[in-house]
Length: 551
Image 1 (cartoon, helix red, strand yellow):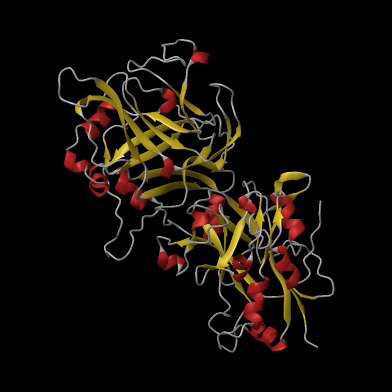
Image 2 (cartoon, one colour):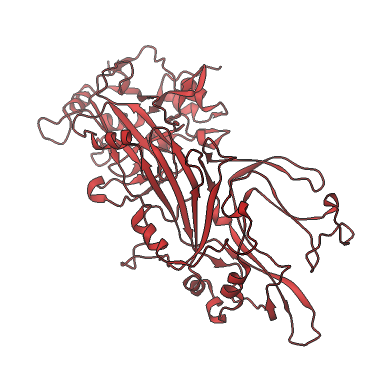
């Protein structure tokens, strides 16, 4: 294993050019080194860190969305549901004459999972895939009661103020608005519906293959002849693994084929007419969990039908199709059943002295706030400890916050994100780090926050280490009073280190002016780390500053 030691800011800038493809458990220990020869070290910096519950979080139009049920041994369970608007792939469609959905037509819904192809099948054999961003100990076996409803609740673009985008939140408040406006029975429950698409749905990594058929629905071979030989079927289309669900053809016929032409003339009107779909999953066994990210923006409904091009009696009846895309406004809802231990920790958090343990949980869970440099006894807006460091005019060569993991049964998040919580913005060290890795989740590896694990047990997390040299140097030596302020820091789990944007929380009175990183909202994971009041000095949260003094 190659050891990389960072000794100075110059070497740090050179390291930005390095692309690293090591595993996450190696990166933290090798790239962010512990050797700082010839430098003085200050580690008695006053640090106060505490946990804050987020409550409901803004969750409309997220960059990725999840569906399913996730169980964490410590934090508890989370169930994710989803609602989306729909748009016509081609507006103002001409269905022709005598349009009808026949017994040989199908109406199906397809939403791809996040996946990567790993092998190519020969002939009409399926290609092989692996799924990305899946969670749950029983992902391939857990089954669900899946319900896909027609939603009659309109998702607005703007709020009461026409200049402000509408915000929807993850909890029961907005979810109840949708669930109170569902149209009848689910669209995937009808005579002939398969249990694997309704009451016994499960996620699958299998490729979806559509074979060529004639107008009567028979399979065809390469010569265009009807065949019953599965190996002779001609592949018409291959789809990456995803949710493939047949929908009630009679209801879709009524919604689309029987619609007034004025309801289909453009997508603004169509979204008012067919307001969307609501996806709801109920676990069949609470001891089995499975949750996946779905790329709903690439999802669609495909409605097949037959019609004539003219109204002549002898005109040929042709098979046609209409595609309805899952684009427009969306909301991801989260239903939590937190453990009593986690609830107690949230209720007992102390923002004055800090906490013994710090709890980060994604979705609508919790984040950590950190205040540096202690009290301001002379009430001049600058902490006493920071004033002393500024007077010494030290040159900051490096600085780290290290968080030791308490393995308390939770399934550890593999990365955390430190940010400016006062201004809801990334830190300078995050901005300056352009380093990349083979796995994009390990990009900005010099900034850090990647879980280091035990060499003998990769399931056992050890610590997270985050470099904040530029941030600390700017606070101590920056000469711009508008940008060198000692801001409050925020710490959250992250599912996408490249996304530094923030969203609102529902209870802004309790949470303050701070927003929440979107990358935390889209992660179901959590982790527990030691804080500043733990009695275990070897695990205590510390800020380490490596510096030299001027001659």
